[in-house]
Length: 288
Image (cartoon, rainbow, N blue to C red; front, side, top):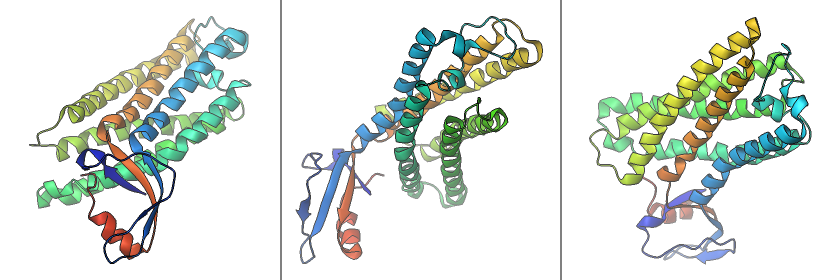
């Protein structure tokens, strides 16, 4: 997979699934099997769980009200948790199918981000390169753990195995917050004394806002979880669920800031001798 920056191309690239033949001078032909907008792939990937979550909430609230409001305390409750609305049928199948489609692109996107950040190391002072490279690796690991934990909480429901579901959910929250914080820190290092365009400024601003929203929501979630678990207060679980939705939405929107990080890139799937590909693609504009 290779990324082109369309804004740096003199001729506009048109996405197509038809095989194209490119033949650099004195080289064997290179075949392009697939050319797609990386921006559009990222938008669909980021929005898919958000749209599915809203659909599950509405349908479960309307058609399965009693099932999704049941708690061990048997107290008054008006907002069901995410686990409740995605743990009943048929919403559980819709949610699991959606997350399967979502996780697939998330893994290569994580590695694209790693290469995107590493390409910017050349602008740093030599003394900062090793530390920043380590931070980039940490971000990749946290992102991959977050993706794995998302799959875990999706396919191991609280009704099937609550202790395991709870631990995976905690792992997801911790890795998500650490990933957000590390990403913001990395951007501050890479963009120090740099002139940023409007899209880059938007991306950084919203990353900070969404991280702050996630932190405040996590505090609220822990407070009302304790009130519900230990004291069974009325509406405590509803407040817990409310902050749970805020955390999920903030997480999805944080990843949605990719639309500003990669506004005009294309994804290529190409075929040809490796040395030819390296030479040919190396002469084209890349993400920097």
